[in-house]
Image (cartoon, rainbow, N blue to C red; front, side, top):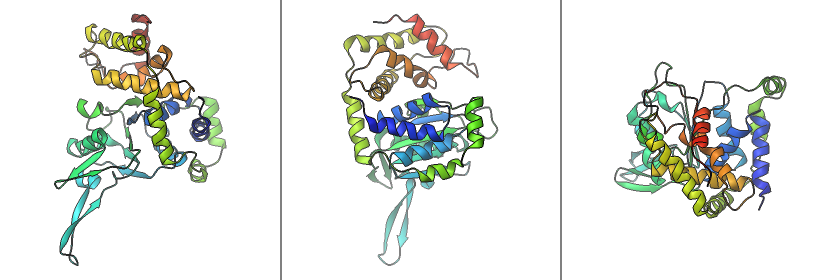
Length: 306
């Protein structure tokens, strides 16, 4: 069941974003699972480039929204403008009406502007001025945000964070990857030279394939046990919700498909667990920084395999 087109997509992205195979694979798994991706990291580590190259190799329409403190919801969703010729108002769609939306520095905007994406991300439609308009398929939001301790940020509320299937970091490249980056060609030129590996309709078909990947009753019990442990452990403000369990299963199915399998293994769940819990588990002492990889490792160790 190995899908060569997905291998080709990963290979193309890894030529541009060097030394970040796991975050890249998680990003593709997120799209295959029909989710949305949040990338939190320092400026200049490749967040925007990753969004560009994903859209490029998947042949998807792309729009970038630069979030600022003075942004209004209409700047995202669109607005009706009066046409003197017809004597009527006509709706002009905003940049959200595309297949891949890069919400750049989303936590620079006010909560009112941030919330404009809520319906689009959850229901894949936009209701403006009393009319509901569907968004194109596939629809994928990649939001980037600077660390919340930086000046001029508005932290995303839990309801908005929960709309993101995964939260990842890219981090600094290792020495070898950085040396290759510095000595190599310009990344923007390399992205521009890329061609699509998959047609948009094929991506929709692949998303349907992900939903058909089998998860056994024992595997589902394992996901339940992981969530149950977080709900009883005193170190968390609140445990993983049923929606988080669904997210964990969805990304694990996509991870299995990327491995060429039609069934989910516990190792798939464990591989994607850090990205699923990164923005969903808050320490009871409200610590500013939590090592999500260490948290996931401790959770895996505490819950026995089925």
